[in-house]
Length: 271
Image (cartoon, helix red, strand yellow):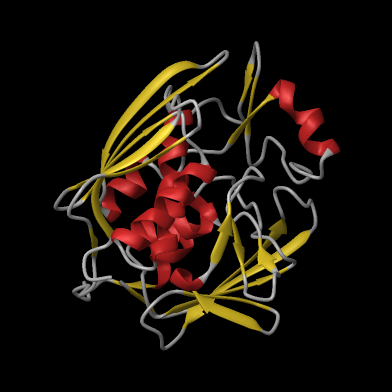
């Protein structure tokens, strides 16, 4: 899909708590470009860090754009893989609504309703897996003819949830875009003392403890695992092109998502 207009959104960064700005505009490019200050780079050329409760994209000079996963999830989830530049001021993506709905709604106003015929899908010929050292958490990719995701999570107070998802822009809008990020109530003081979650609130997150706090209530009983699918789609955007694979993720997160993306870069057909 192509965009034919601009989007300008402002808000606090989820972790920094500082005012940030996001501009998405048409741009003559074969891949989505991200820009901050004087730096700009296509998605597939970035280095990444997924250890700070989000996905941070790192320029060659060491500067970065923090917490990119929700914006990139909405953008690529709706099929925008080229012809767009994302400019960020403030060093972090604005948290917006803590999911992909607000940006998806704005994108739907400017997306040209035409299929461009993507010529360069990412495909694999054999399974690829990354895991934690104890192998209790992992993400694996298997050859497939489309993007399919099976995600399983387990948390205190939430329990076990599993979601099986076949990707299309329509299914992304209906089943994934509105699933909000969440934090365990017991972690909030720690996060804030380490400079994270300073922009978090019930306007952009669910707080999980003995009581689940969610503005307007949960949107689905399994909103938590749906949000993990949203995160994974955003992290797979780092490939710079859409992926055909069946992804199986168990108790994973941004660090493992991005490690899988790195392995996929090395194993893609024709690379």
